[in-house]
Image (cartoon, rainbow, N blue to C red; front, side, top):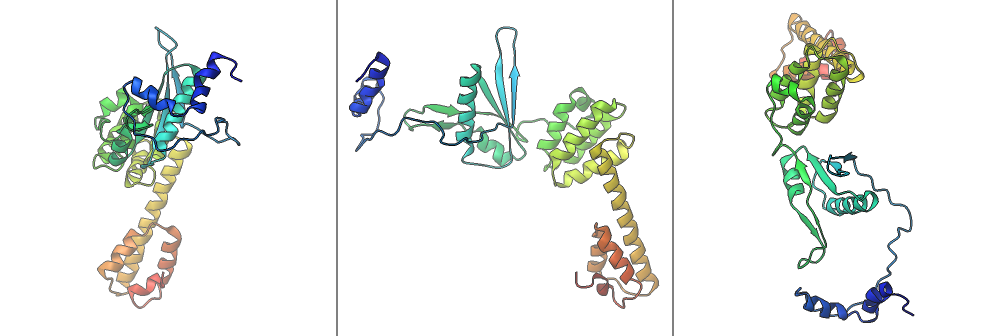
Length: 294
């Protein structure tokens, strides 16, 4: 038995599902003509906990009111399932905190950034219930900071510039400006910048540029990643020295080295492999024998 106005206002649609068509017509919303309708279970409680975790959540307060929330999402590639998660984040945060949520998506490639920029409407095409429209930052709209003075004014923005433009032609110039800007700065400011930049560049070629700059321009700073960077630089220097020694041994022994073999020896970065090649150089009769079928 219906016991309250609240119950009556929604349960009448369970009893008379076709009522929705009449209401939509009154409201001037043109919907497709239904061919059938059925009531679904109204309990939306998750049967088991589902982990939903936003990458970073910030609360900004303002002078006028309690402020707003910013959910920061790092997006590495296009993901058709993401907009639904973003919509969930926004509605959940609004419900939990009672504050307006804003979604910031940070991308490292232009294609993903342009995809994330497109608004996603959830609901029927003729009347979307939720529209997901994140604020997007990426290589298409973040500045290319190649001036050390400009980088020094806002180190965090300079780091984000380096990360989002890591695959671009400007990466080397951005990183050089950043390493130059860090000279003479306090160690507690430098170390987080060094580490965030190294992590953000991933396995791109720009990472090696940054490691070289840290080893040379910031050699007097110490941190876990900066020490690791310098050690890798020293290791690489040793391997390059052994490659030169290997080529010199072959030259002194009168063994011809093809361009392909020379390029492979000079390009080797693995110290263990280089040691094996160096040992073989003393006894081989051709340069190709050095590689031992590897």
